[in-house]
Length: 318
Image (cartoon, rainbow, N blue to C red; front, side, top):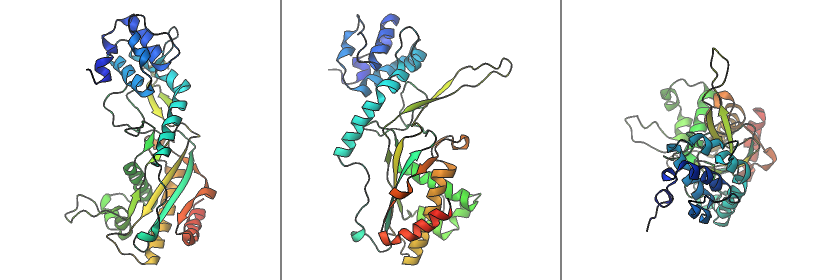
């Protein structure tokens, strides 16, 4: 029995006409099945069909599989515009049923000085990132959760984005400058290249999941003629999509006083505000991508009596 979709449904081995009909059928369950390849009509899972569509990258119908055609339609763009929303909403329901969405923990069992933050936001500009998949119909897919295939921001991505934002706020020019700052080491850990043993910081990040996907295009223009050529397509999470940033501060290796923990909270409030609303997160932030609006009234912080510490710093940066 063939257990791989690429082996069981070899799109690249079909003739050109069959490929054209298949490209339409794979992204639209209501389209006609290819006469010479009716087997693909039995595939019910959306992402399995997208995996088969990816095989078109090695055929002469690569662009058609991406953007469709005037005559046949179809393509990944059609799926994104007509079916992706329902697919991601279903997947999000699975995540919710399995309780995989981050929630704030009970701090009672954590060391003194621990705090947790949950902050809803809405993208003001599209979010772009790079997925780690090796085979996809686009060269620039947005990062997706490995099992449920919903767009996401991984914890390591959040850590890198927040650390970069705080570097810019503090005008650090080298990693060594940050390595000399006790608070930065306490928050993010020390630099791995140092001779001393690596020690993790107090911050622990959670993933963020989205339920929408879109397309962005960059179209380089010929300097002589002024016409576009070879457009570059990017998957993105479109503007207007909501997400939740979640963060936990647990001083396991460090033992800060309450005042030090509050100072760390104030520094993070400044850094998170700058990352989300000013510098952006993800790819192409220098072009304005990845900035968001924060729903301030929905910010949740534990312990609750530290709300004033966070709010004062947050408001001073708005």
